[in-house]
Image 1 (cartoon, rainbow, N blue to C red):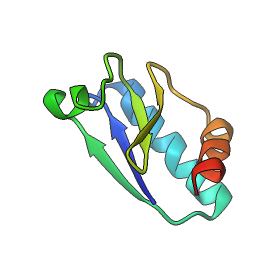
Image 2: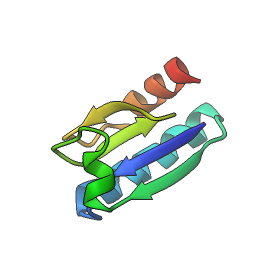
Image 3: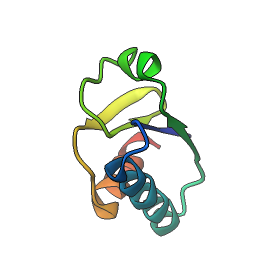
Image 4: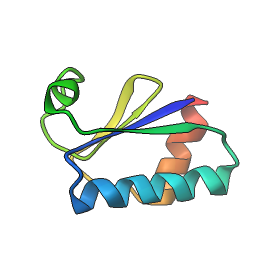
Length: 79
């Protein structure tokens, strides 16, 4: 599983990455986390508001920082 955090590196983007790491640890799911900060790359996903969470090339959330429990539910759904 590949997870991408889309965002410019702002505090919300950092928080989303940390929450994603916590969710992975809670679920025991093995995944690679990639930060995407290039605005052209972010726009290619159709995302206009960051941070965004992408699981296996599917945008599952954007414009908010999800809690670890919410991310864990998404990970289980897409694994």
